Amino acid sequence: MSEPEKKRSRRRRRRPPIKKAAQAAAAQKEGQAPLSGNIVLCGFMGCGKTSVGKRAAKLLGRQFCDLDSYIERKAGMTVSEIFAQEGEAGFRARETQAAEEVASMQGMVIASGGGTVLSPQNLEAFHRHGAKILFLDVPVAALQERLKNDKRRPLLQVPDRRRVIAELHKKRAPLYRAAADIVVDGGAPAIVVAKRVAQLFQ
Ligand code: S3P
Image (cartoon, helix red, strand yellow):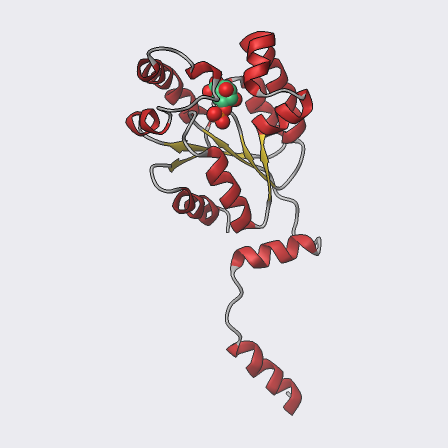
């Protein structure tokens, strides 16, 4: 090795390791990283799909997409307005269309809605495009606490919200589990859960 080459190699060894997320982001920008499948976060309302998803996407250098926001942008209406005008069935039809569209975008972190992965058609679309589905598992008592003042979610605008959450959760928890490739403990601050998620893909 020539003197300048030795110097360069010593310099390389001393350089602190670049963070993996930054590396991934840089590689993606340069178009070097192979496009990988989507990471889809699923779980009950209030489990942190959006807040965790945004942070995990940043850590992994991926794009983030929130399915409810995508539906709202396309419809020019909020989820509440869609429920009010078209009923839950109308919302679910829009959700399935949106899931199909978003599933075909590669390399994203996607926050699904609380009911998205309960439809086999939506699950099939995500899996067909190589996604991994992660269930953010949060105990029902914590969800009841997180959702106690919610004004946004049509399914929760009911007098006995705690009971409705408990009943829905009982029905849905096994379905989230069955849909998921990986179960992640979601009972921690969003950044902590996001790091757990990011670690799985680094
Ligand atoms: C729903 C959850 C909501 C939204 C809609 C229906 C559900 O999303 O898609 O209100 O059936 O659980 P979040 O889980 O993001 O609140």
